[in-house]
Image (cartoon, rainbow, N blue to C red; front, side):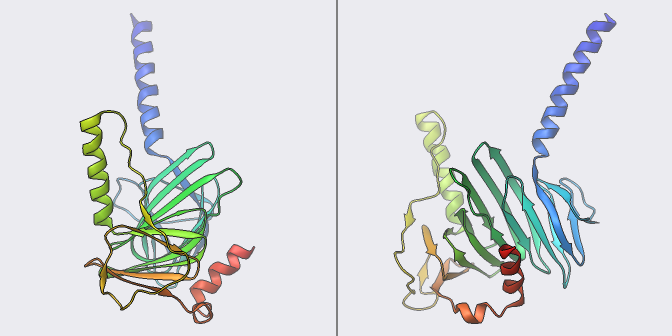
Length: 254
């Protein structure tokens, strides 16, 4: 009887342990905390100062104070750097062989993504802000988040941008279609409005973003809370003078 009870408890322990392990997927490691960088563990309410090479997990929140920065080395390769006075929620990290997906929510501040995909690898890194969603497949970009307006600048490769409201609708439609037809939902990022060369919207904030739009290297998009956006080719020389940009480019070059 006791042996049977022990085996039951052992099975329950492994089930609980497996569920906890699934919830605590490693997002990456904080390899370079500068200044006051803090983490709030998933489900917690306390902020604790991070240390070098400290692991961070899905649903953790990273916060930086004034004159502070942090670099996160993503599980499976790639970097995500957080600027000062920023708050980043680590939403998802899925590593399945050569397929690697990361999703983070930039509630405020700045983030720099440098996640070039290796040969045969598919790497998707999505950053959400209060007004925009930026999704990449092996490239380099930065996002600045504000409650009323966010911006995305592309330094290498290609970035797909949309509004959070549109993304929610797409997923809702995909779920409804699944319920009607049966089988797994066939939601994907797209369709995408392709841009062959850097162009500029006719006038600032005259167009409302209703679908995915693709930005190539050298392009910037500013997207407001009302859905209107301004897309243009940013001044690379002026942008390169930014201390935030210099710091990230130097680390990427190492």
